[in-house]
Image 1 (tube, helix red, strand yellow):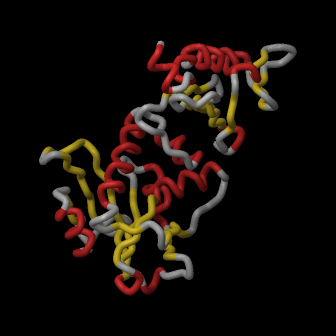
Image 2 (cartoon, rainbow, N blue to C red):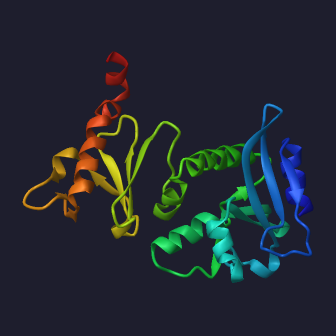
Image 3 (cartoon, rainbow, N blue to C red):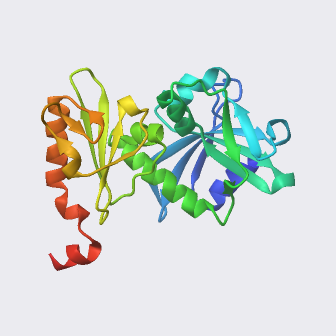
Length: 241
């Protein structure tokens, strides 16, 4: 934990150690700082030593009975492994992996920490930017669906959630300058599906491509397509508009 604390504090972030007598699967809380000002963005961190968690391709951190808290807690939970023999610190987003497993109707026993996911002085800026971006979407209520679909929304993306009368969510995702949108659908295990307005039809039954919809879902999708036509223009076209 000293290595993890030192890294974050060296870059100006705030680290709070959690009482070791209360093992709820979280060792540290990290609050990100920008330009000397504390932000609203925080994460929880579980820290592990490297030897006992090693695999050939990285490390695995056992979920144990922390799965529900790591998946559904108020803060995203990261697993950080300290393995100096392999180069130092490595990290994984436990919350994201658990949510993706839930989408696939699987039980995740271990969080996979890749040897490529290095956390050090060179990568921490990119790491913090990525985590803060995901926390923005989390506050907007769509971070869970990004995790379940294993995608990352950019700050410039248009993301429109919808919930039908049965409480089943869907996401319409439009990236700037991309000629198609992406549908994230609860019935498709959240696997991203490219969609075009021309694929949407209402008769004889509402569908987009081969995906069956109900009437409300189809009308919602039509509204999404119409309201984002300008964002599907290329950057050059958008600049001339």
